[in-house]
Length: 164
Image 1: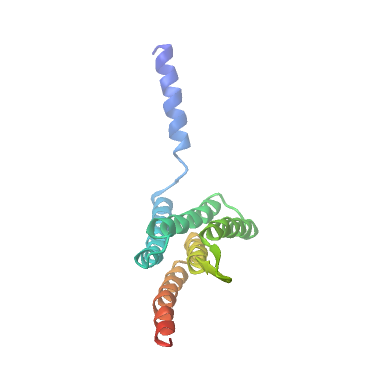
Image 2: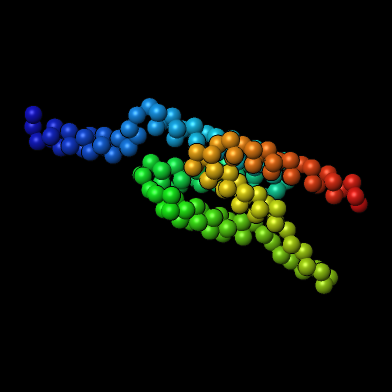
């Protein structure tokens, strides 16, 4: 074995150690399942927003849900306490608040203020909450919340239109 073989072995061994954070098939399955479920649930909300012609659609909601889920999944995998997970959740909420704020537009026309994007901002925020629920292992709660949010997005506009 020459010096270059030794360097290659060191590099390959180092890469192998860096990719060994998933310890077994059960852990890998948990991570993949949580990400896929978060993507699906966020995607359902995003699909509704996109078909309603809103700016934050399918991809945005999927990424928000997956990101929130991943932050909490990482925290659990690294063995953080419940108090530390609470701080991760607070960070997710604050970060998503900035995304939501970017979706809100305020304008004035003829002396009347017009605010748009509040429902989209609330949807992004709620999608993050669903991702957090998935990330901490509360998948049934996340599914229930998604169904409830879809019901609100579908039924409430119908009710308000029928009253006009």
